[in-house]
Amino acid sequence: MATTTPDTGVRSASAETGGSGAPMTHRQIMEALSGLLLGMFVAILSSTIVSNALPQIITDLGGGQSAYTWVVTASLLAMTATTPLWGKLADLFSKKLLVQIALVIYVAGSVVAGLSQSTGMLIACRVVQGVGVGGLTALSQVILAAMIAPRERGRYSGYLGAVFAVATVGGPLLGGVITDTEWLGWRWCFYVGVPFAIIALLVLQKTLKLPVVKREVKVDWAGAFFISAAVSLLLVWVTFAGDKYDWMSWQTAAMVGGSVLLGAVFVLVESRAAEPIIPLRLFRNRTITLASLASLFVGVAMFAGTVFFSQYFQLARNESPTMSGVLTIPMIAGLFVSSTVSGQVITKTGRWKAWLVSGGALAAGGLGLLGTIRYDTEYWHIALFMAVLGLGIGMMMQNLVLCTQNQVDPSDLGAASSTVAFFRSLGGAIGVSALGAIMAHRVTSYVKEGITALGPDAAKAMQQSGAGGGIPDMDTLPGPIRTVFESAYGHGVGDVFLYSAPFALLAFVVTLFIKEVALKSSTVTGDKK
Image (cartoon, rainbow, N blue to C red; front, side):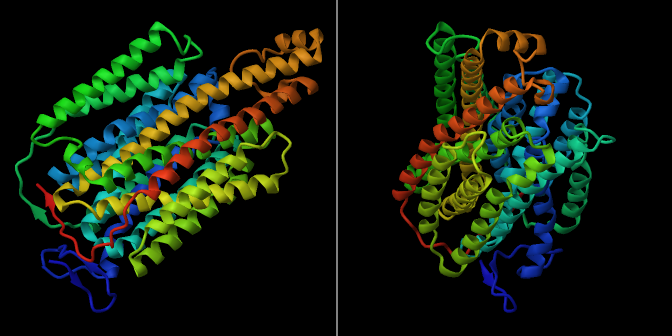
């Protein structure tokens, strides 16, 4: 039974705080959320801190654009594939124990990633990090929903959004400073999150207490395997198509066909599983289906913005890693403002659809405007476009989860929350892979055009400089050739944003068909054992 605390008006389940049946006050909720928010900070930090360091990392480890993309995609892939599993485990086991396990996995992956001697080793470590981050991302939403009723959840979801914004802006800035600090170097980008994770582990042990409900458990390992295999094969195809083999080739047919087949087997397994990873019956609910679809498209827009800006500012505008982080602040400021304000307003009014629709329109508009940028575009134009994109993403990201949680039975809370997060991560992973492949192709094409225009002497000079393969070190290039590369990267990143805009537009269209249901004022919590 949900109750309302007299001092704060916070309505929550009768979550126990040390064995009593007293309802949680706002202060108790914030204490319980402190470790969770710190864990969420660590998860987002690990994804963003490498963004401005990546050009230097890939150069030092001798990788190219494909390796650049896969360092990001590997983490997203692992996060995507494991998010439904974490969500389902949260419906079966102790949420507190699970989030602590996720933190330990993250720490292990981070420590080894900092020791990487090749791009292959780094990518493997990013997979381990992604498994931990998937748990932290999914479980943060699940535990929040387990403690707080949907009507009041907007307020606390806003705090998650604020942490997301701080970690998103702090990550690139911190990564840039670490990379630019000679006595630290880029390896500390992986080490720096470890103390935060350990602190989060200790805080969670002390503050997070949920009531325990005993339940027989059975994990759908077959479902977890087939969904991971299907997503992995699809991403491998997207990454290498057009580079290692043609888009229309037998490799494409084999990988796409294999991915579809594995997906069909997954659906068959889920339809028969006693405790499915993703309960198919959830999709009978129109809101959950549409919110999942919108999250898929939002993921493309969200991760495109965080991944490719570092290449734009460092390679097209010759900025340092630190300044690259500073220059993306307008996007993060927009995200911070819209996520916190929308959360507060939704809590007061119980209405959320207008925020989703507005967010879709702003995200599509922001990406379309960013599609016009070139290496010499005035910064204030770019700042304005980034702010519009940030406002749109902030309005959609948390609220798509919120409207889904409002529609499900408490026993499906974990699965439903992680399903939306899964589709968002899937969109991001596919988007980063596909857009990275497109960018590599476009940059190569623009460089060839630019060098051809300069004449045969420029081609010889480029060969002598060793700029033909991988990501170039701009400081070593002759003046005219450097301008060609800067122009190519500026135009290439602009193309990436332009190709992302239709996905945000699709998210906007999908949200128009989501039926608004007033947020519930009660919830039932329970932790499984």
